[in-house]
Structure formats: C-alpha cells, structure tokens
Picture 1 (cartoon, chains in turn orange, cyan):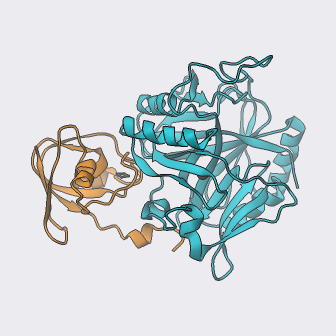
Picture 2 (tube, rainbow over the protein chains, first blue to last red):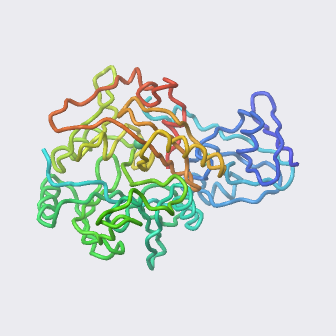
Picture 3 (cartoon, rainbow over the protein chains, first blue to last red):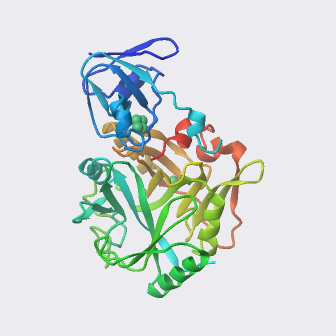
Length: 103
Length: 307
Ligand code: FES
Ligand SMILES: [Fe+2]
C-alpha cells in the first residue's frame, strides 16, 4: 500500500492508501486532518495539494482550480489523484477565511 | 406581486464526465433520462414533472451551473417580462426555440450575483413519466434509486444579494419567503418564491460571483430521505451532511455531491408561503441552527465548498 507523507503538516503526517482510493479519501480514512475535505469530485478546489514526489493516476479536475500552469508545477486536487507509489506531498494553504462566505 | 413566473423549469449543470454524471442523476437520484442532443448534452427529469426535462448535463472543464430557467404562463407574459427586464436595465439575450431540445424560445439575462437565468413559455409536454393522466396509478413501479419526484430549487452564492432580490421581486414578481439578517441589518440570504413553496430560488451572500451551492430535488417523506442516505452509503457517494433538518424552510434534507463535485440535495417537507405572509427571519448569529437545525453549528463546507 502506498505511503503518503505530508511534508508541511504541522506534525509531519503519514498515511496509507488502499487500492482504488484517492489521496483525499485515504487521508480522510486515516483520520488525517492534513488535507481539507470538500466535494471529493474535483469541483471545489478545497483539497489542493502539490506533489513533491511519486507516481499516480488522476481523473479530470476543474480548470477553475487547476490551470495548466499549476498542473505543470505539480498542483493537483487530492480527490482526483490515485497513488501508484509512495508519495510526498505538500498541502496548499488556501486561507479558508478567504474562501468562506458570510464572514 | 405575481408577474406570471410559474416554476423552476430547468437547470443546466456542467460536469467533468458526462456518462459518470448521467449514471449519478439517473441511477442514484432516480431521474428519468429523456434525451441527448447534438451538443452532447443529456436531458433528465423527475418522474412527476409534466414537461420533457428539467436537468441538462453538459460536459465541461469546470463544474458549476450554466443557467437556471423559469417557465412563465404564456408567450404574452414572456414578451411583457422581456420588455420589463430591458426597461430595468438588464441585457437580454435571445435563444432560439430548439436550442434546448423541446424547449421554446428563451430569453437569458444575468443577475447581480453573477448567475444567468432564463425565462421561457413553452416546452414539450411528455406528461408524468410512467403514469397516465387518466386514472393515474400512485407511482410508476420501475423507478430507480432515490426516486426523486421533481427538480425543486437551487441555492446560489454571489455578491449583491440585495440587488438580485430587488430584480426578482420588482421585475419577476417573486416574494421573499425567508431571509437571514446580520447584526448590522444586512440581508445576507434571501429565499424567494414564485409559488406556495418556501423557495423556488435562494441566494446567499459571497464575495465570489456566480457560484453554485446546490440543485435540490423533492422526495415525499422523511423515510425516503433516510432511504436516500442509505443509497448514498451503499454507492460510496460523496456525502456532505445529513439526514437532518434545515431551520430555514424547515425542510428535512440530505446534501451530497455528484461525481464532479456539484452539490445535490434531496429533501421533503418544508414551510409554505402565501403572498400576504411576512418573511420569516433568521438571525445571522444563529446561522448554525438556521442551516442545520439539529447540529446547530455550520460545517465549514456549507460556506466554502462551491462549484
Ligand atoms: S474535495 Fe472538492 S476538489 Fe477535491
Ligand atoms: Fe435547498
């Protein structure tokens, strides 16, 4: 099972991914709080991470959140990424307050 | 005052993968697949709806809502509202009959929250699906999944809720059924109705324009909302929250996501509204209870997870 290391989590976090699970769902199942959970469908952009190292399959992601420039720089939506090897990732700190409405 | 807008008629939703989305709306929600067009769009509806379709799915790079359409009483009303919108200062776009398969002429305009709306008077009527209009049986036997009965409303996020409310009230004749007021007296949410329903369309204040919070579908009973929750688990569908009750409108509800991250709701119950009713007010300080009546706290996702 691929082991994922989150490099910039407050305390360095690792979790394992079961076959067929996305990076986000794997993180959720391990009770890892490292990656924020949103729609789990590549639409909302909440789960954005940067891949530092590792191989993976991916499904389509909203262009509104991952443009080509970002994709080239290794940014992905964790809910659309299916790890094929151990991976090292960085969570992208999008200010939740910035995204939040009614605040 | 009523201006001849009848009901939410359709919503066009952008999805990342059309077939995956069709399977979700058809097999899980239980909508009926009615048609496809040469642009590759898929047309669906709830089985009780008499018009040919209410949900249009379009494959695109970016999930979200393209537009929502309201059906008006007749072509005279359509022409009147067209000139009223123009006089109000809206740029009105003409869309020819047939651009959506089976739909008559549409007029399209953008509201200050950044969402596009349409009005139309005619759509092919195929009747309720699976039951006759004469001596109709209670329900068709071969419905799938949640057996959603109809497309009911959308909740949209954007700036200028007040100006959008004014347009819906003054030009389109909607009533304010429910609202959320912050301590400074600003209206931060407006739930609007053109009917007796607690909402046909709702807006929540948000700095980013044109955002889609959810499209909602009506179920008959609390039992069917619980059954919907079972189906969401059985199919490993992305859940948001519920089953629970809203404070606003008092509907019993569950939120979940389609495979492209667009939020869906199925719900039952809810308050009713007559034109002489005062709007129901929730205080923004109590927004947790207003949105999720049982938990009484908002989850972060309600405010931030949008397409
Ligand atoms: S959780 Fe919404 S894009 Fe990943
Ligand atoms: Fe709703």
